[in-house]
Every structure is written in structure tokens, then in C-alpha cells.
Image 1 (cartoon, rainbow, N blue to C red):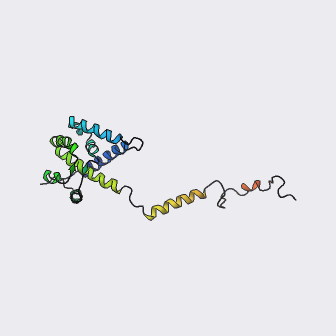
Image 2 (cartoon, helix red, strand yellow):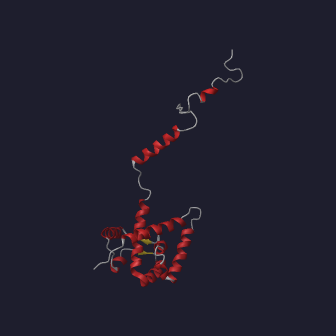
Image 3 (spheres, rainbow, N blue to C red):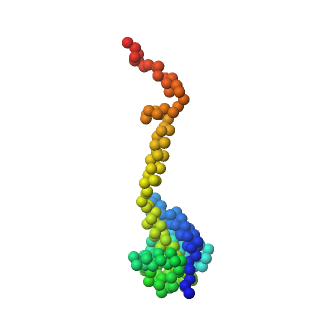
Length: 185
């Protein structure tokens, strides 16, 4: 009988891992994420029991270093849609680990094989999340933005567009002032 994923756990792991990744993914310090993941890998390899308290560190450590082929993308999508955890033989052919990460992967597999599979499911979800993040904007979003900009312009304190929403006579009080005898003949 096949095991199932705990969807709530996967979503929580995805959210926590994504927040960790984003916190180190800073354009001002482009190597911060790389340094952090290198530290995490060495710590997890030395003490995999740490994952009992911070399981999101495994997807963070492997982020960007696990590849999914086009064929395995279909498998992962089906497994997640059916909420079915793959058995090890299916799993090992559905992911490609970076050679430098194999010692960590072997250590984690010995510690908790299901956590390794869950972490790869999270990485698959993150890949889909990041790829879909920018996404196409729909026309309604642009309309809302345009109307917000228009209302902002209409509330401007000056009268460049000819719309005067101030009290009657307030701006007109200076209309009679003339400079350097202008208007006098």
C-alpha cells in the first residue's frame, strides 16, 4: 500500500523554505544564499537529527541543486495531485541530485527517507511556484492600477488638469493681484 503526502505539511514546508530562501536571496549580497546553503548542508550532514526541529532546512539546502526532467515533472505533478508519495525506486529515477550533494542525500536517506522525498516534493512545488510567480497580468489588474493612478492625479493639490475641488473662492482670492503694473495701461 502506498503512502500519502501530508498536504498541509508540504505547504508549511514550502512556505517556510521559501521564506528562508527569499531572506537570503538579496541582490546586495548575491552570495548570501549560496553561503547559507553550504553551511546548512555541512550541518545537516553532521547532524541530520536537526531536521526534526527545522525540516524546511533540507529543501533550502538542496534548493536549485535538484533537477526534474520533463518526464519526471509529469510524474511529480501526478503524485502531488493524487497525494501519493512515490516509493524509493520510483523516486530515485524522478530526481537528479548534484554530485556534490550525494553525501548529504545518502545521510538524509539513512536518517529519514520520507523526509528526503517530501523535501524533493517541496522543491518541485517551489520550482512551479517560482516559475509561476511573475505570471501574466490580467486586464482587470491593469484597469485597477490605471484607475488608482487617475484618482491620485485628480486629488492633486494643484489645478493643472483644470479640476478644482477646493472650496469656492479659495484659489480665486489672488486673481486680482497684478505684478509690475501688468494689466494697467
